[in-house]
View (cartoon, rainbow, N blue to C red):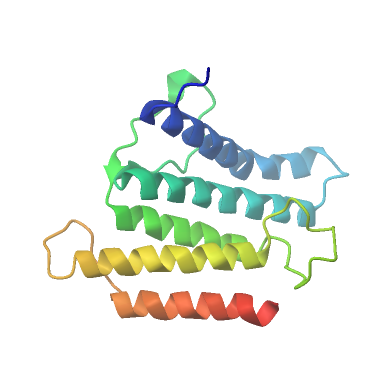
Length: 177
């Protein structure tokens, strides 16, 4: 019999994946110094993959639980786990979008067809821009929800601005096809 995982188990799984991404982002560049067969280009693609995966994992948690801790530093041992406080959802969304924006310049470019297998198993630019559009929609929803409300987060963009960004990100994907 399979049991349904509880909230703690789900969070633990996602935060473990986030930490793996943080470790690769932090320590991956050291591999370049030690391994002559590992190129700068390979490292950039790997960093883009990790930033996109970290963003996606935070996004899944945010959509499920709203106020979540933001984990962007690596942890090597359980004894080092910091107390990550829960932060405003827009702080998380801003970090997610920043990670995806960085990743969009590092991941493999989508080739616009399904005929090539060289991108198989990789997050590509179209996936990143699609996720960025989804994040923009959530940012717009929160901007509308908190409009006029007292909050710790300082909004610098309106819901309309986020919707406009979502359209631009969708247009990028459509133009690549």
